[in-house]
Image (cartoon, rainbow, N blue to C red; front, side, top):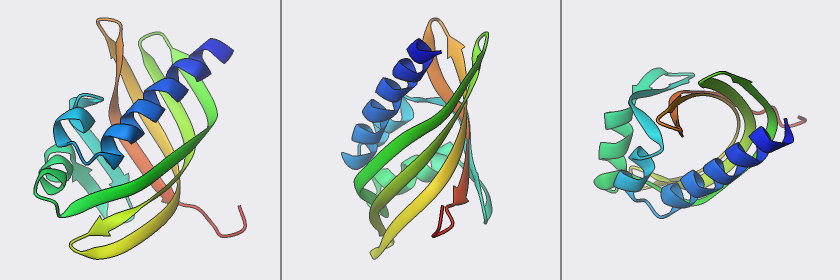
Length: 125
């Protein structure tokens, strides 16, 4: 539904702003306490990421998203996006172009992310 897409577009824009602000507390407010990333290296837990942001080991200077699909099933939703982001990790610059599948749960009327699955985008996609 168009309404669902707008809800998640607004949410992701605000979450991206918190990430670019490198504000660990604000970033965490968009995620469940057991939020995890799944990527090519395996599972990365919420606290690992937030601690790295708070300590300055991970910083972001840009993040954009484009929603490709939203599927809402009651109080659970899956949002598929194309994300471009850049920053530094342990002092080394990075620039990523990724597909993400995000699983959100709605509690007390608020959507929070539970799982983020990252897939590097192919250069031609």
